[in-house]
Image (tube, rainbow, N blue to C red; front, side):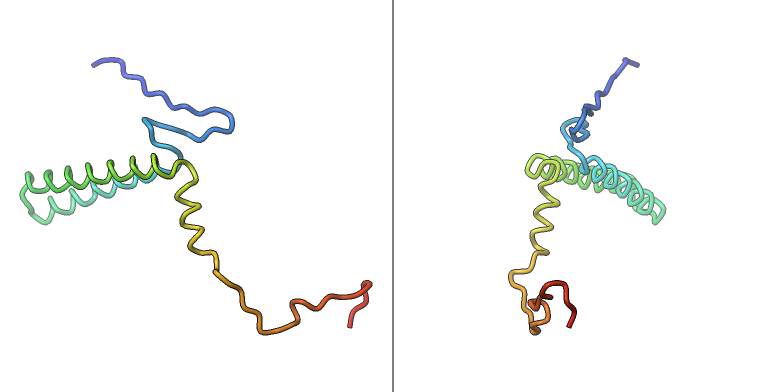
Length: 110
């Protein structure tokens, strides 16, 4: 067995990167692998043919790895979170009361 070394580049103020995956995408890939392992075990216990299980898991695993790498390359470290947050910003704010705009003058309370 060869001596394989995987480098994790982590510097000051830099996001963690492993094999081209940045930041949270490493966790997404780990979650996909764990989910696929559980799905394989469930299919095997149910009694599905082993080769069918392997085929399904390999196809799903390949698709998930390709998708996660494309998300990592497209959005980078914070881009996907910014895109999701942008959908939660309201287009307009409606106020039905003037209490918001009334101000207290010279520290006196009314």
